[in-house]
Picture (cartoon, helix red, strand yellow):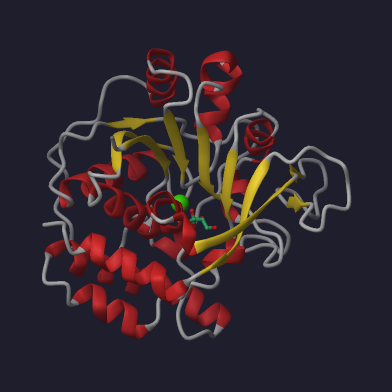
Length: 313
Ligand code: BDR
Ligand code: CA
């Protein structure tokens, strides 16, 4: 039986690769729906991009919902400086023909979890945690029926990418993150500490481009675009690849090394707002609320992505 998952996402080229890899893996993963959230770009664009990704994969049966259009307490920022004004710059994708679902994304999350066997659904978050936190605030007992949240968010050793102290998905809505991390739902967290070790080298992008299908070509074009900012910033041989860690962990968890730790979100300090304070060395007796992924087999990760993506149209 494939594992039932819901993506909560702000596509984003790396979000798109995470979703495509899951859609390429129907034996292992059943994508019940995709809920868009404001993040890398505004909600109007993240919803459009989610529809385009689903159509690119030839899977218009996967419903796409619009969730929250702004952080719970703060003003919106964007990641357009990395992802482009459209959020999914790179390939020339046709405008979507699929319709967005009428239901609000937060209602979809609540209704789906309410109807499911407790523990049977995995929430996969690739963006700010606004939708999940809004659902939690509205229906805590229902949302706690999620089996786990597997997320891309935060950092410990690599600290921050949108400020010196904070990673984008947490910084966008730190109060939402705080609620989610204190919810008691088991969390598997993939942070900059792993995404900074799986770089989009020229060889890896050439491999995607050469898969012989339209999805491989589009993935190469997406990542070729989104790496531009990070290549100039870090001067590494490739750019970090963030969100596909979530799908790769679901498909092949032995690619990652992890430890159970406490993670607490900074919501007060102006200087370190949105910091994920990871008790990696177990200095405190705070409860271990997160399985924190800190090591990754980069070659195995790219082999997995290439093999899965080659199955798409
Ligand atoms: C995260 O922020 C976004 O730019 C990416 O899509 C990823 O989810 C990395 O910090
Ligand atoms: Ca994202």
